[in-house]
Amino acid sequence: MEEKTILDGQKVSKDVKENLKERVLKLSAQGVTPCLATILVGDDPSSATYVRMKGNACEKLGILSKRIHLDASISTETLIETIQDLNNDKNVHGILLQHPVPAHIDERKAFEAIDIEKDVDGVTSLGYGQTALGFGVYPSCTPAAIMEIIDFYDIPVEGKNAVVVGRSPILGKPVSALLLNRNATVTTCHSKTKDLSEHLSKADIVVAAVGKPNFIQGSWLKEGAVVLDAGYNPGNIGDAHYDSCYEKASAITPVPGGVGPVTISMLLKHTVASAEKTVQ
Image (cartoon, rainbow, N blue to C red; front, top):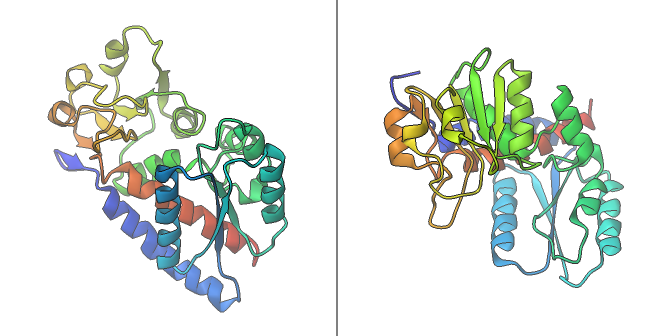
């Protein structure tokens, strides 16, 4: 790495997609079109935008996007029936249930209904367990994106001190496990952590995943730390205070244009990998 590296997620995402284009063409020659089914429950504008973005990204690569829009008033049971239908559809290779669902629906129960072979978004507890044990095929997409950026820029992980700020089941916890599986020494911090700045002052790698804008300050960081900011807050603001962290970091992801674009690429990558299993 250079003295100061901007970890460009658009560049990483483009590289992933170029590789996927060849794989999709190969599948097409074998009579298989990768298919991602996205389920949107209700009319949340942000969720609708995310689903549309994912669908557009699929179509640009020749991946079929099957969009299912359900009424906000449906029951958990009806949602699970829809998921089961997709599990049983051999032409569907990945299933994504857009978060959040309406409050009356048992979201965890719905996530658990997704077949592990089609859990390309890494939301099931079985998928999380497999990721933690080191043989998970489809980690949650944002943790997978962070590892993809690390690999693209040849950032050393083994033996390094990594501090993950955040412990959500689809980001903080799985990325901690992925880093640990790469032989990093991992500290997982959160909103109840005492002396957070003390932990961060020893970190070679910092993952910001706490969901609070401009939360992590550059003054807390070790000189030369690598900062991977997975936060995305209103106004295109990350969880790390970019300007002050930039001064201390040897490498840093911008927001937007860092982890975000790669996250969607990981969803596509997992869907293609799932489709490839059907012809092996």
